[in-house]
Length: 102
Image (cartoon, rainbow, N blue to C red; front, side, top):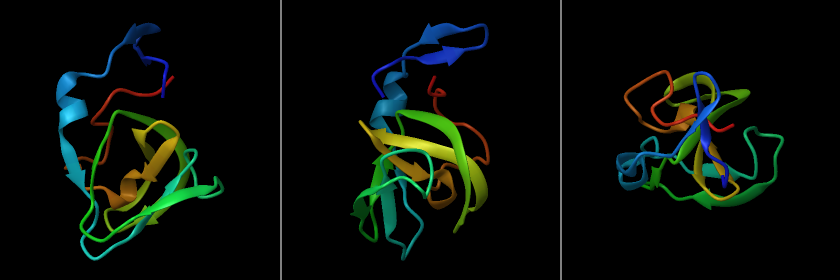
């Protein structure tokens, strides 16, 4: 996303450099649809192959989805106009691990 995340009282924050450089694995043996927005109702823009890893620049709430890592309404922004359900991404957390999208 082009806009900064909003922290606490609405103060914008930039995505930390570490979030831009760290890649998270997609669930083993799984291909994942990359969506144009935070939900399965959004158009699929591409498919991540088995063994893919993704950066997480921002995260935002969206449609609830179930995947290899449970059920979540968190969607990971992995590029401009590209979202994957956090339920398929190994982040080590059930919550947010990157700044939230505004």
